[in-house]
Amino acid sequence: MRLVDSHSHLYLEEFDADLPQVMERARAASVTHIFMPNIDSTTIASMLKVCADYPSFCYPMIGLHPTSVGENYEEELKVVAAELASPNSYVAIGEIGLDLYWDKTYVKEQQIVLDRQINWALEYDLPVVLHCREAFDYIFKVLEPYKNTALRGIFHSFTGTPEDAVRIMEYEGFLIGVNGVVTFKKSALPTVLKTIPLERLVLETDSPYLTPVPNRGKRNESANVKDVLAKVAEVYGLEKENVAEVTSQNALKVFGMLK
Ligand code: NI
Image (tube, rainbow, N blue to C red; front, top):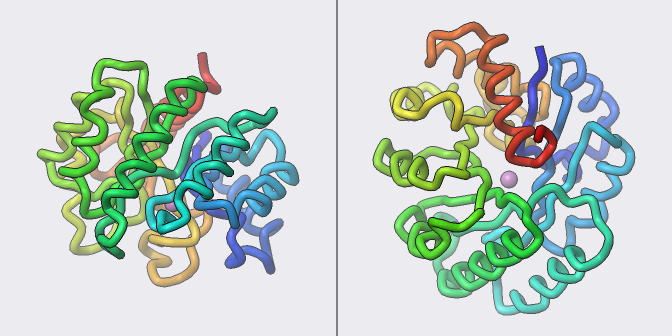
């Protein structure tokens, strides 16, 4: 069996003390690829270091996260642009998107920043990894003009309604990323998932956040993608091996690692 963690921030300080053990546990849990979304200019160096220390296992993305969009967004975007224009190993533009849960102050700037980065994704032929929190109506307004383009990617940490899922499905190049939220007791996600074909699904942890049951409340790590797998397999009524293979292939394909 092989598993892919399509979204994991193992380069954050939460892992400073025991990163080698975290990686070992991920490998022991059959994880073969860990994809790392960037946050902003302050996280690039540590992310690239971890990816260099674990070659052919950890893969970096570049992008400006919506919660890091503020007055200085043009400066931050310049950093992303410079990274893309230099020789690099980025496999996606991420994570990017809209977040109106934490703060609505910069909603307009968030939309500008997202649109700019979508253009770079098309220019550099890279997938996008989207973060969308309390912002589905806004994000579809930004995405609509790109509906019939080559734009592809992942709606990470999906927790939307069946209607949101339907709207995402209309974008043929897009997959839905599911994490520990699916294991939470009051989550509506298991019901919503039933409307989404397995061929459109990828698994993730979003480490160090959103730890699945039975470790909910503790720091999350990539090995726990196995607990997401177990729940998703139960929801679909399929063998774990089957769900692992299909979702891993989906992830590798969108990141350009399976032709
Ligand atoms: Ni994230």
